[in-house]
Image 1 (cartoon, rainbow over the protein chains, first blue to last red):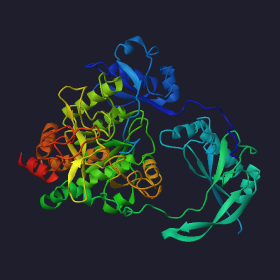
Image 2 (cartoon, rainbow over the protein chains, first blue to last red):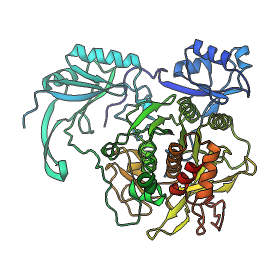
Image 3 (cartoon, chains in turn blue, cyan):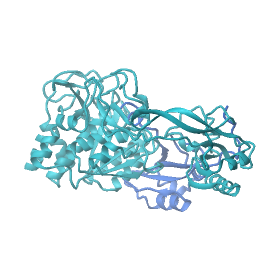
Image 4 (cartoon, one colour):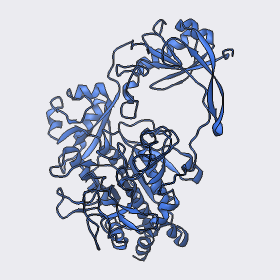
Length: 103
Length: 469
């Protein structure tokens, strides 16, 4: 049998990403500034959304309910003034067809 | 056989996911490979420890550290015993021969050294001794099969009337930027041999730009090249949990056309938050002049395939004698999300149920699509090998890049063509399809219908119409 796992416990440096969604017609300036300041890599704003990416540790610090699974994340740790500029932050669910199935 | 002077191996730093790369029962795929990565700190410490022990470190990756050293060094550091043995192998061009393997009896897994008795046991979960490999690059040509299927690029190009455009009008997609948002792109000899050019961008959360562990993106991109071989093509590799972000990254490149061969299954309102965001991104892209082509689905009520601004791509099956019928594998339906929106708009070439196994497509060898369609008998399986770099599939995932290719030809003929004009022309010039039912049971009839939209796209007529505008 292969040897059992040894060594340090899992840490939270694996890459993670989520999608920040703005209310329609809302400027992205404060949202972008907050997430960039927190250490996230922030993607381009297209339509009403922009991606935020960073290590899982950072994602969990900012969104305590983040576990990598598709869901809308709680914004309770996001400052109120930024929260007001956000509709939601979501981890998307994978598409239902395409790379997962026959064409 | 004596042991070689130098033994090469892959040392695996302790996986952050909690299960060793060598102990897991899960199949390692693009979606779960991050849990087999080690943290940067563990990789760094493992590299230092291996160097300190006397190994030469050749390459460091998130999952393994490539090391080299004499056999005695492995035996001393890992408290193991190495030996060599001859095994039957198949070498280049299928020649049966013998190969020399370095082995250990530490574990039941061939070639795996147990690190538990070594000073690096807290940093390295196992060491895999490299085995001899023989050049097995995938063939540039698909394996011949007796059942009816389409071979790339000729059959798809001819079926859609694109070869006529290439020869008589000289349009091949030159100077037109097309981005496909998908699982990645592997530089298969099929593409390299034909001089097809591509670049790969990484969407947020994706990694390994030179690999496509799924095979989907690589294979479906061949549909685009078959129709528009000279496009400026970019694959925007997406994380499966971040598809809208990858679409946004594609928009940011400001291409002429974006092709989407995936979607979520949304029959009734409301759209979820991420789909609402994607809807806004699609609308913004089209508003800025980008043509967005999206698959209508393979039995799903696809979103963004039903978005009113996209060219919704359906499926038509072409028989061996050239007869056309609605693909029983492809979606087509009146949208309940967007009023007065019927999908698809127009169709490309797609296979039939159960799996749409229809077009011989190049994929990364041993990728998911290569392995999962392999063996068996058609139409359930494709009768190819699981690691030969070829798989037989299609779906509206194939149709979308086919239509994107026709749009590229039209764009070359008429650079200021708008997304709405492109869709109108495709619908007006398509070949009507009057036979068969689609995956939802809708019957193809004379004129436009929800089985195939306006029918099978005709590149020749479409480009002529665009050029006349």
